[in-house]
Length: 242
Image 1 (cartoon, rainbow, N blue to C red):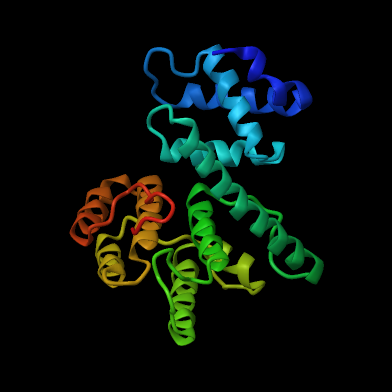
Image 2: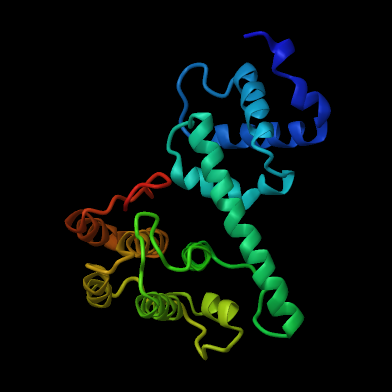
């Protein structure tokens, strides 16, 4: 490849190029790679492609790095990697705007960091708020159905991530302890309630992430329920059904 024709963006914005390159190097250390993956030449080519997607430097942070690692066991191709970063950045911007509003209103507790499990539930909530609780393949969803989905989603968030519930509502949940993910009977009931839900894919993946982090001994139960419901652990590509 002629590098003279591919380094234009890097030359115009060397600070962003260096920042993104360092981020990609960190990603490469955290995923499995084949020979030639993430070498110096490929990193430079990835930077050029990413710069053309006009993603800001702020999109390449520790949170987006963790989000990409969660979805990439192996070093990813540049296109799906860009899509994942863009997806995370959209949610992050939405969250920043909402948290700023809560702080200015004197509501919520947006300053304290969330745990990995709480972050999963926060992403679940923010994504669905962005899409008004309508899946990509759905057309003409009734307002009462959207309201029902939002109510169920908010109830799930309050049950399993009360701090997130407080942050998105600006109210106090009156709870301090997280859900007991080791309670197999309670988890089995929750999995049963999730089956058949219009957004079962998203809910199952939230449950999977939470159980994997808090009670891995119960992970097989979650994965079995997901398999029966035809839901994969990895989220579907944009525009595909769960």
